Image (cartoon, rainbow, N blue to C red; front, side, top):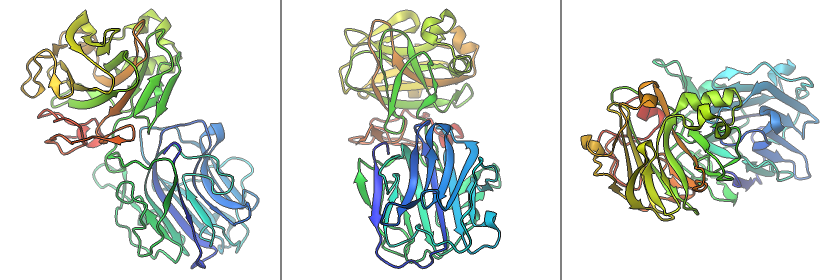
Length: 456
């Protein structure tokens, strides 16, 4: 969302003033700052809210601006590659104070909280569900803490405190917590169900409590709790650089071009039979930089050791097949400095197909592959099968960044979400895997880098 939030002012008397349930699936993009998930005012400055609080990245739930109740997890939420299912169930009629506010993460009740823990008093009347303003993705009272990330299946239940098993369940095969897309419950007068399918703010419950976009642009994404797509990883980037991540971490722009600066993808690609992935990148605003693949271990090791890749000879050339736009805007395979003699311009779409089964790497421009490449038939392109960085590693990631003396890469990635930034692809190509939406035809046998794509 970044600068986007949803808003609605309710006018009806709620079904219940002491019981409610909030359920939502969220995927964070930014960490280390306050991000409000949902807030409900009392009309005069007070509010009930749930948010990630400050630089600690703990989840905090409070009532009446924390003066009536305040719980904050010891646990930190810093995984930007996964969807979290969050359920907050409140019932202030309970005799035991700790039963009045229950917080669940991926179906498991959270029990470890920081000092200063305060539960609501018995029979406390909530602002949640009241005939006042509600914001999803922003603090409704002081208009701060705009959420940066993705949301899906946001439920508010007026008058009932429900278990997380109403909204999610454990997969019998994988043991993972998964979404129930059509949960059954009594929604209550001021209850709602939004963001069910894409970016719809229309209430999908039996009510008509529709929201509006208060600010920003609400963008649909194929990335969802049932199929997680790769994005650029704020936790897997060169620690010696400043890199700007926007649009749900699909747009990356290094702040300088003075040295090798990289960011990697959140999901890794394994070297195995059938491991063939496709992605598209819109070069935006500059002619320079690089885009391609690299070894996952190198970026991970650099992060763990706090190594600046740009100033360390061990890491500077970590074994990669990339192409870059040089000063004349041409694509190069850096391995062997092979010039494809294809000139790139701003807003051209650059394609990558990586075949980790056969050790082949393909790049293209606006639907045409370079070097007589034909990924579907395993011909042309660049043979990387004998490169030491390929033979000595098993996990790879997409990388983007700058290249010394060339320019800072400014790339809007389409890992299958169907968008470059907030702009949808103009005409979706064919895709035999039916995973992801791309501008151009996905080569037969290739798919998007996503959890379902990894399990084909």
